[in-house]
Image (tube, rainbow, N blue to C red; front, side, top):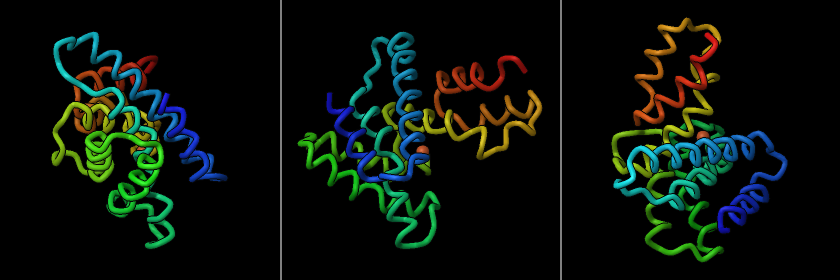
Length: 172
Ligand SMILES: [Fe+2]
């Protein structure tokens, strides 16, 4: 499957930076979980699993050049630097053009929701937050009500919110 080749490319690209590789793999896992839930809950709605999974593998690929060029891993720079690198990798693996455009667009906006409104985008966005939420919002310091509010605010899809509640509110 192309996913595995993309993961190989990701590992080559980030090399010693295991943290970035692990992040992408964890986001990909959550993306796959969300895809399964989405298909079960909305069998008639259209999503493109490959677009979501490939976007998940490559979504933060811009971080390396952002740090090299601007000495910053800020989301804005990642969004600029990610798409060209992602395209180069996808071109080398002969991903079709239409799919490549959509993935590049998702990567270009994955820190700024609202501009791309597809379900493909929303599932990738929520998968990323399922990994990032504890650290970005120091979840350990929050009580249950605060966590609930945060989940409501951050996640775009109902299934993203549900999975977040399961991950972060259970046993609390
Ligand atoms: Fe990410």
